[in-house]
Amino acid sequence: MSQETSIGVVAPSRVNFDESLTLKSGAVLPGFALTFETYGTLNAQRSNAVLVCHALSGSHHVAGSYADDPENIGWWDNLVGPGKPLDTGKFFVVGVNNLGGCYGSTGPLSTNPETGKRYGADFPLVTVEDWVAAQARLADHLGIQTWAAVIGGSLGGMQAIEWSLQFPDRIRHAMVIASAPKLSAQNIAFNEVARQAILSDPDFHGGYYADHGVVPTRGLRLARMVGHITYLSDSQMAEKFGRQLRHGEHKFSYDVDFEIESYLRYQGKKFAGFFDANTYLMMTKALDYFDPAYDYDGNLAAAFVRARASFFVASFSTDWRFAPARSREIVFALLHNRLHVVYAEIDCGAGHDSFLLDDRHYHALLRAYLENIAV
Image 1 (cartoon, rainbow, N blue to C red):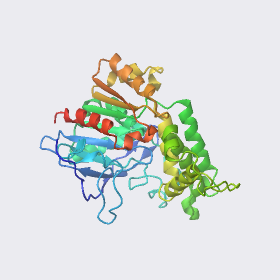
Image 2 (image 1 turned 90 degrees about the vertical axis):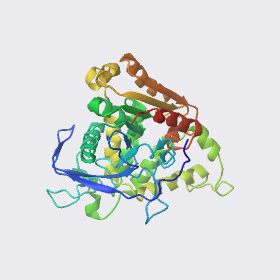
Image 3 (image 1 turned 135 degrees about the vertical axis):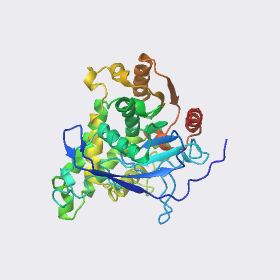
Image 4 (image 1 turned 45 degrees about the vertical axis):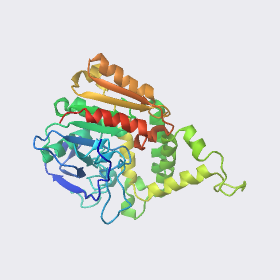
């Protein structure tokens, strides 16, 4: 096993696609741009490429840091790099900011060529299927016919599933982590509460807040606070915060009394400082709409008839938002189609966010699977 080191300083790239893209909704984008980063070297056979798909608030910045911002470390830096489970000594790793994102790819913050102003609420809803179609254009641009693997957690795992269905001959391994074949009613409900927090903010202005020089900060803060609660497990909250008092005594007010209140407010404020509200609305809707079995009368096994890839599916014991039972649904559908699948149910106390952490058992499983992918 090679020694783990940092990927070091990285820089993003951006590519423009002039050909129009017809979205699942029927809307047509006349052209679009994607921002992405790459790590490692594409081999002569172009057979060692791995696509990393991000979750709701993720980006193309998967690993490494920036020369002008060394504290900005990639969101999966503990996984990607020389000697790490996703070893850049073996693989050419690609991270992309999805269409509609707010980190450089075409989205609500971009200029609408028809008006000369920001798209804002005029940017069409995009889906997981649309993201994968756009990612395929990026693969073509990079000269990658087939991905050795597509990997992602949560919403990223849904993209890995969609790659296996939309482009079954362009993916050899799908790695689906802390994900689900579709959202439960409870998950859709959480997303709707978060959206309503944004939509009801007086500074939202129907999605055209940029025209008014404001940001729906209050709505974004609340949306992130609601979401963040669902990413953590009850045991993790108890361990980190319990009922600790911020000032050592009850203040008998509606200000912060408990440490967990302070933590949620901090997370909400931080998120509202960098994430776009229209992008958040769109991303949560993409989560809600994803359902490969929809066109098959709810039969997930029938939906997976198209798939050809081998699968690695992993869940976490305390993830109540994307519970292990949801991953087992995927596994059963794959086995029904006699596809090769490895399933791991990992005991980790960190809830849904476990897929982002440097858990020894989890990373050992990923390393073992990735080491066995031939390139």
